[in-house]
Length: 296
Image 1 (cartoon, helix red, strand yellow):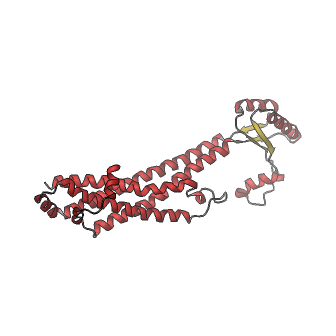
Image 2 (image 1 turned 90 degrees about the vertical axis):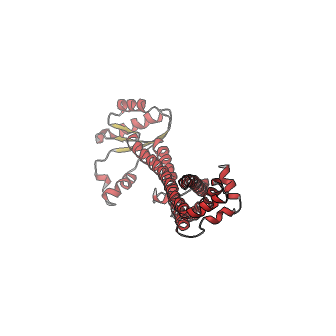
């Protein structure tokens, strides 16, 4: 890494003139680095947003549970009171409340429409339970004894698939960033190899006048590294601008409006140009060494 910084800080050397400053290799390297950096910004945003989503779902669902109470009408009030008393005396339960018909209608509205007559339907009594460290198995046993019609649901069945899906999205985002870095390295390798082949005659002349391979390779490595750095910086800036213009996160929009960076996470994309420069440095160095051996 220190070698890379020294290479970027040094001024243009006489050997730089053997690398064509323009042409398709220059445009190809810059465009590829910019395009891949642009995609990497969105892959990073996806990965970070998926991580936030997984944490939010894990936290929100872990603290809440629901009790469904299905009992004959003449026993509903008594069993409801028994359930509330069990919850009141359960260590770790911080709040328990009966979900009113208006909230049940709001929960069912997306599927059945706004005119659903909740009052005339045989819906179970729903009780929301909030807490963190209570004994769920012990609570189930107490409910079975005090209110046979009560079913305790701690949302584990729903929580695990959601959190697992969000975590997989986070891993896919990280994998996409690695694939993008590999694509940048592969394209720069091809471009550097083409530039070396195009300058084969110049390289032979330089060798005849005493130039060492390390001196010749340095010119290619430096120029292609700078091209990767400049293109990636441009692509990163455009990607961050695109992320900034996305709608702000809100509850109604859910995951799509939360696809962005928050707080200090805005610093993460700034590492993309540096990583592109590292990929360009390593790829060009390997390509230069291989090409120079073949030109012996």
